[in-house]
Length: 248
Image (cartoon, rainbow, N blue to C red; front, side, top):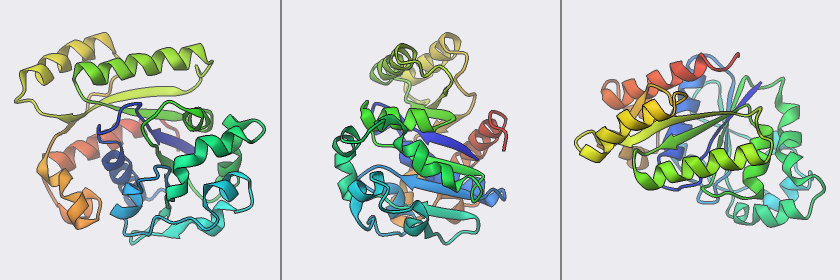
């Protein structure tokens, strides 16, 4: 079982769209896939038409009073299950802080699922927090959407500094460009400059496109309602790049 967190300190960079589409493509490729929506906004849950509600809330979940197996919901797609969000997840930092070894709690919760899933995707809220540290501890791969702008680059630098300072060196940090509008000179210039500065950035570029925005109206992954187009090809290419980085 491999765990891939889709994470950024900054909000509005395409994390949820990436998590939903990668989970869908993983399942479509035949991998037993779970998507855990850790964001209290519950956008991933919404896209899969699942009520963002966890019985007992985040407190009982983190305390181990609820097994993840009892909370997981099936989706409309083969091989793809969803662990929905709950609005109480907004307090997960407080809940974690009250536990012993808080940064190990997510890993401990996910460990029993190793025989059931090949890939688990974590749709993470934007922050740098105790929950973030628990995500870093539990994950094999940290996939970070990066808009080619100054502020987005700044958060990547902050993240790299934090990971290095807190001994998360074994975690594989993989940034990629998201919500890119090549009509904007700043986006085009930054694509070239940042690709040279950060050689680990994936080659795939996810565009800023209306068909991706339609996910909110359709409440489906892109590939479930669109059969062709640049956005669909971009997510497929991103998935193939990720497959080369993880052994599943």
